[in-house]
Length: 152
Image (cartoon, rainbow, N blue to C red):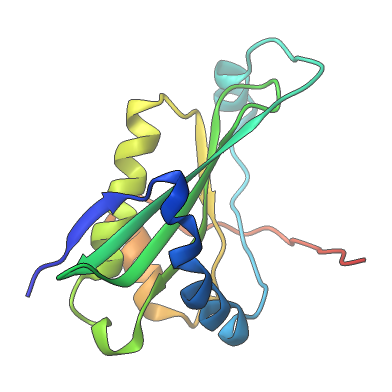
């Protein structure tokens, strides 16, 4: 079985809400990242700007029109070059194990490539093996970094 991967239009964004709620119910926050060399960072670093704006890009996986997964990407330039993040990835449980997550992440990476993103990241749990596999398949690699979070 194959699914259609497409970008959601602005008026379709509410379709993601039920799946996003499913994801958030099951999610725990953890992260890791590997430091990069100073020379590599220096090569990426453009002039710093005083402000930035961002963009949301949501990709949907559909089977006969029904939403069976999504990938939410964020693009922003904090003044150091365009950055990307896979903010959320979710596949409906009965569709897992069929490569839907990999197809969605591949679409995110195509977006990052088209837009000349200088850095892209994603956070997931180390024990979320299907997600880790999808990310690695698309060129992401694990790193080590402590990420602390603050909630109001």
